[in-house]
Length: 367
Image 1: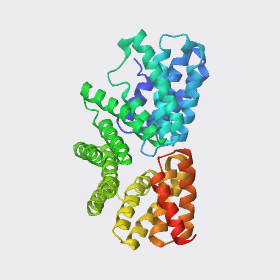
Image 2 (image 1 turned 180 degrees about the horizontal axis):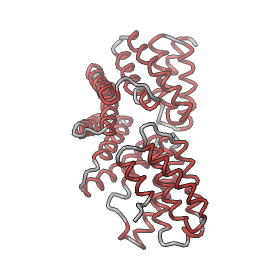
Image 3 (image 1 turned 90 degrees about the vertical axis):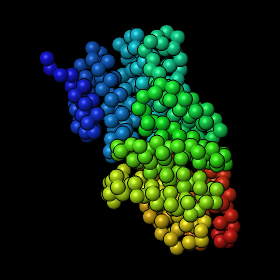
Image 4 (image 1 turned 120 degrees about the horizontal axis):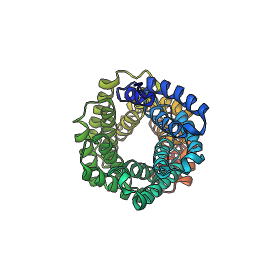
């Protein structure tokens, strides 16, 4: 009996060969699309799988993943799918994945809307077919919802979905430790923005301890993120030497995992520790070193902004602010203020701390 080609692609992905899985899925997509309505289900499953692999491969291509999801949505709307008993299951899967990809592209409002549609499908299934629901099926949707709300400046609202997801994950048991770490990191970030520093530190230390138990590449990257985010919390608590130690650990983890950054995806992992290091050094009065770290982060963020401008808008503005402060550079100060004014108007409360800081800097430099 011939093996299912989609199952073969799935196995390739499980083995870490996402490029091979994507190539096979692309070929299957063309084959099923040509077959028309009789192959609608296979076409939809193939597109959902293809989008996921494009989004999480070692060199992610989120715009391509979104384009595939747009095509998957058209397939989902076709009569064979809409007239089937699986329409809500497939809709929930489609919208959950769409919410994730949109969040990774910085389109928080669109991510939130897609997540709400996914949750609506889950509510429908809970009434009509509860047996098909997984105990942790809502977790990724709630995770993306919490992250999107935080990105939109609705920081206090972000905590309930993150807490609900964490509780559901732990109640189900299992080995979803990477998701648990991500939830703890997101929770810590929101708590820091709300100036609930003790709670933020507790969440981040828990995330760091859990991430240290894993050895996979994804978990090591999460560990680096957790350490960098913890450093940000320490900076807000004025524990700058501890912050520098934490961010140094984050950089060491990245070097041990990837070596020196070469690819675009590897470079992107460095902007957070570099900009955080610059923030801590600046707070300690070590302006020359702070400027060096911020200037290393700047080209990474400008490159990233070419693909996902909404995702890194705040981070790029912050790096401009750090360079402006470290070097008394009026041009960078003006750029930071312009970027942060736009963000502060768009997402009230989310960027106010940095916006006020940029305004003070522009005033001080007489720019």
